[in-house]
Length: 397
Image (cartoon, rainbow, N blue to C red; front, side, top):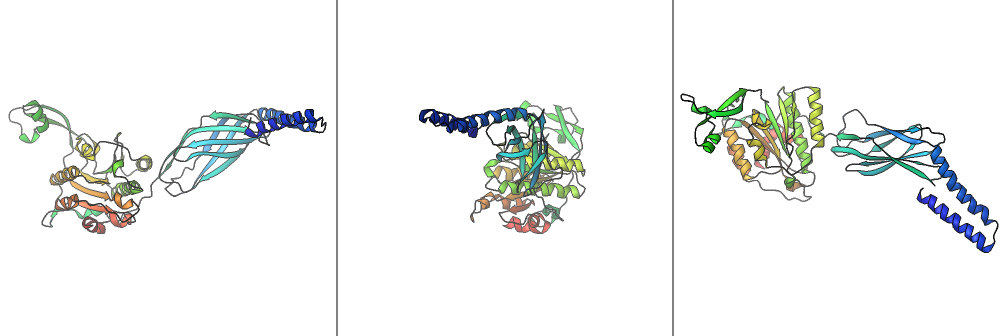
């Protein structure tokens, strides 16, 4: 019974008592009429049928941040003998609860306006049936799981700021040596006559005797785009810029025929390879849509994992909102080891709503090692900053 139905019963009881107390016979039909209306509403909702299924249709086309999304609902009723109003209450993550009136034996659509990037889960759904006067209601939870993915708006890059090559201290371009396609499989004791190049120094230091690496052939990705999801470096919409930059770089490399992998530095260490196929592209967009800032080990831990997708790639493209000294040294060591490294640094302080900017003393150290850097601040043109012509300007900023 609804709040209106309870008020009708209370008013009916008060009218009946007033009629009895003052002997007013005309009030008796009014009181009985209110009782009869509530009883009729109860019978009506029982005859209207019981909801047993909710059909929710979401658009199949790709949806990008800022788009309006139309959701279509249809409620299936069991043994419906009387017309009634069906109220669908949905709880959607990040959006809260919303109610939609759906005609029985028909469908109704509603629009979610200008959704930001993210993953929106339909967590709970309750279907209620009311009589035409709203005096009685039957509520029933229904299982109607679903999720809506809103993709980031990426930019197409004609050129990449990292394509200018790595420059040495004297300004000359250094040749990039492609690492061999072998991965560390295990370590074993050193045998006399073996090359010292195969020595695994970390295990040697632990065991106090020479240990050598057992390598196995393994295909490598051409480039790994690493997205740092550290929430400590997020201010306002700065993480959205990181996501758009990472996705734009990922598909920029893919369109050039390169095997690329997106690696998210989170607790789960999610990754998705893109090898120029539509399926890979859709799955990478799904990952970019769902990623959120969350606590995780420092980015340096991920880069140091020799078995990880980032360490096995021939080129590293780092997208981050912070540049600690330890990360700077690690990236410099990668570059000095003849690996191509580029950095997209998002100045999160510029998203604080004022003219505040962060100081990044490590930028000069990266430049000296020949690492290409693109610095992004609030209001910057993403395509311009990530293109070849903006690399020098970003590094000097």
